[in-house]
Image 1: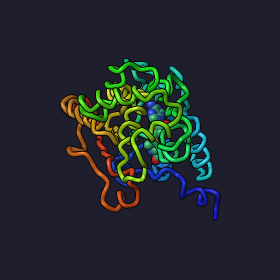
Image 2: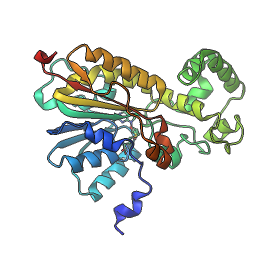
Image 3: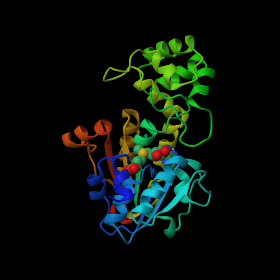
Image 4: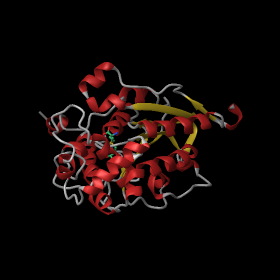
Length: 303
Ligand SMILES: C[S@@+](CC[C@H](N)C(=O)[O-])C[C@H]1O[C@@H](n2cnc3c(N)ncnc32)[C@H](O)[C@@H]1O
């Protein structure tokens, strides 16, 4: 068995891969994967479009190393850009916030993919606080900014309530924020989990708290809003932007933004979000909340 096959079981199971490949333009020559992760989607794209140039960006240095190794083992050449993304790189806009008034043709992509959220490795093995039993409570994808523990231990009631509103209705968010403050400080994910009881239940009550904290630590909502503004102009004519989200608020932002694009020189390819089928969810529970939406850039005279 090859080294790649030995490792296979532990790679992040890429979600809706067939549907993503099916939405890639046939004549795809330049691709951007803005969330490389374990490189699963990148690998599938590289195999389907062997002549395409692929650029991939990733915030987490650990993920980057894993993906590099995987792509190397598979013999695939991909240009990988790590964080901090250089100012000169349009792909870095997912984070660095540079705006591109005049985009050169060379900067344009025929396909852009964003697979939002967290990889299985980060969730189960990284030990950085994404998981209930971790010794740390960090949760940062990159090494920038405050950790989850710092946010949890230092934030005011109103800030914590605001953070929890990404996963809860306002009254519940305020109530939970008060409870979290009463039991501070927290040094590990384990201590945070313990506050909400046994982890043997199928849907542990701390799940949504972990999700809200992770989103706040990595400023995920702000990054997505920025990407929704700045990625569509990076598409070539006929180019497509595909976004896979796992949170209802994020999917709502993508849906609204794509609807607006649909009135302005873009065509919605997914009137309703594509969801994983029964079999994919059976094989990978993480897929159950996935929603895929795709938009295509039209020529100026096509609308
Ligand atoms: C769900 S995983 C991607 C999995 C990947 N599609 C695969 O098939 O292996 C999401 C990845 O995006 C990364 N990420 C999150 N926000 C990012 C950003 N603003 N820029 C670049 N990478 C980001 C995370 O570190 C994580 O590794």
